[in-house]
Every structure is written in C-alpha cells, then in structure tokens.
Image (cartoon, rainbow, N blue to C red; front, top):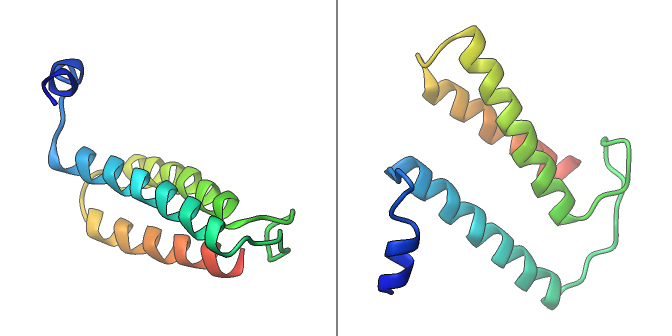
Length: 98
C-alpha cells in the first residue's frame, strides 16, 4: 500500500477528483461484470450508430466533459449544481435512449 501512496503523491488529489475517478473505475468494473453476466447486442437508438452499454457510457462521459467546459465558458463556476443536474439528465438520456 505504501508504494501506491508514493506513486500518486505527486498528484493533487481532492475530494471531487477522487470521487470522479472512483466512479469511473466502478463504472467500468460494473459494466464488465454486467456484460459477463448478460451479454448485450448492439442496439440502435437516436445516436447515429449502433451502440453497447460501454459505448454509451463513453459517449456520456465525453459529452459531459464538453458540456462542462461550455458551461464554465458561458456561465462560470456559479450554479455548478445546475450544471450537474443537466449532466445527470444528459447521461440518463444517453444511457437509456442512445
């Protein structure tokens, strides 16, 4: 365990970054386990190509980063809770209907 702490000491971890990376790792692990238990065929939603659960997760994460940057450019860091709510709705729509 000490070598992990020594390897990551250079990073400036805060609670938000830790939660994000923990969510990312748990999402990938959960999707891997879910796919092992119930494999999914690609399906066509409103996105222009057939996607799997993992594809939709990746598209949701990439879109969230873009939307967050747009929010910060237009609004600034005020009302970040509103941006978080918009991103939650966006990711839910991508996951279910994408």
